[in-house]
Amino acid sequence: MTNYNYKTTELLSSEIKVTGIGSVPDIDEECICEFILDTCPDIPFCPQLFKADVRESMFLQFSENLPCLLPDFKKNYIYYDKSVDKDKKLAEFFDYIAYNCYDYFKISPDYFRCFYAMLEKNKDMPNRFIKSQVVGPITFLASVLGENGQALIHDSVLSDAIICGLGMKGLWQAKEIEKIGKIPVIIYDEPYLSSLGSAYSPLNKDRARSIINNLIDFIKERDDILIGIHCCGNTDWEMILQTNIDILSFDSYGFSKYFVLYPEKIQSFLERGGLVFYGAVPTSEYNERITLDIVSEKFNEVLDTLEGKGIKRNSIIKNAVFTPSCGMGLLKKEVSNHILELTRDLALKIRDSSIL
Image (cartoon, rainbow, N blue to C red; front, side):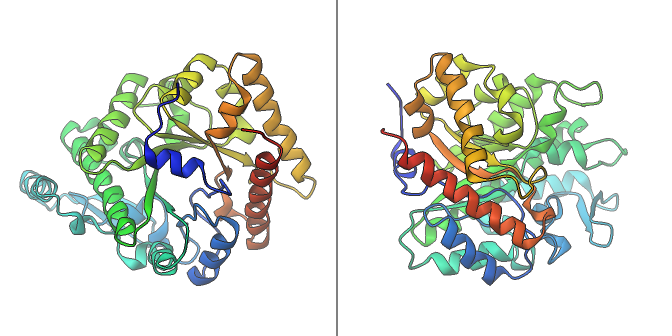
């Protein structure tokens, strides 16, 4: 028997189970938020507008008040501040966490304009959910360099601080969403998980699992929100499915053939109430020949494969939410908009063709 909590149950009862991932190419937050509310009325999302402002790029957007780090807006880069007293800075930082000072971890309006616009527009809307995101700690720690020129992931103390800090960034968003009576869905973007297992990767799957679980546990101790991980490439799906996440988000159009290799783990994940966000409409691979019939056929191949491995078709569909693949921010606006509309149409087609 599937173990759903009430938030999961309510999300799965949404009329149109579609949302978005990450960035869009727009520069006008008012315009794109209206479009998102039209295409994703039940689970609208707060996109990043990095073309409008470099502060909305993945790393800079969530860097405010993280210890010992400073932004370089001209280079779109974060560097270690060697001028600070590291021990003092970390002690102050962990005090803010110990006292749950969520506002210390706020994301300023110039860093996330769609978040504020979406909150304002949703105050009187009937939808129950708002989805937002944070850069994942694995990706952040493996990409930003520390005081010795090595990735932060090699510094155990700073690693713990960043995991907690990014957890607080998600919690701050969740608290703001809850203030207007909505249920938050927070996804941590982990593109670096595609490098897991590579000879060039500074971490193994046990460390990756530990970081993810520490993040989830840190957040859940403070607010029982729906939390997920998004990976845009191939990764160790078996490991991810066994973490404490509520939601697994991935680009299913390009990588489902690897995902379906783990039917037992997928079955267990679904049975414990786990949700899968399927990035079922391509972005980087998109062209005018990609139609609703093509993306529908592609998703049905996933259903057929998993059903053939013993997972009930209706169980897969019931626990599914549809998204575009990530990378819309690199496209032209009209193409990005069309992809989001195509995703909505796919969700409606799957819903209408299924008897749950």
